[in-house]
Image (cartoon, rainbow, N blue to C red):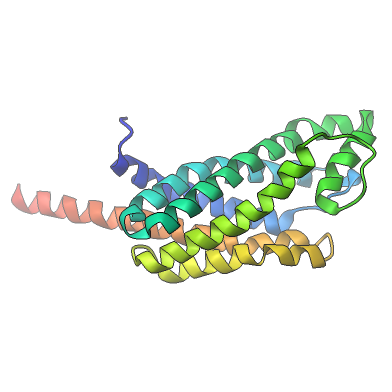
Length: 222
């Protein structure tokens, strides 16, 4: 299948829906970032879902932007770039959490605890080089990217405007996680997951309606 703007938008709707559903489930099911969680089935499931969020999110976000690029302007483009960079960086972290941390939990617990310290704020005895700095950068990328893309979606009036509002508000709530208990911090992701699911469904249903209308015209003229 040739990669065209039309095909990209056609498949990006389901991709964004998968990303949104996965991200919402990550928020609901994420176990505490402590050593005892790393070897559990829930840890593996949640971080596989987080990888799905990044992979399908990168595909779907491109289609969301392409659909409203003309009217979203530089604001939408900036939001798209920032969110895409956030998804790419998160994919790297979640890859480690799926494939590397569980085997190391019993062999090198100090390394695992040092890694988890980036998320739960505990001091690490392990030198992780620039990784803590990269993780810190993901926060502003997520907040600013979601805010800009959400506002651009609201202003463009192409996709449901209130889905853009929910995306902007949901990502702007990110800093609130710092004042919540560890077990409640992931719940901040749920509104953003719902916003992505909403945007993806809107794009998918829009393409279906256009395809149905085209088929009806062809049938009428046959």
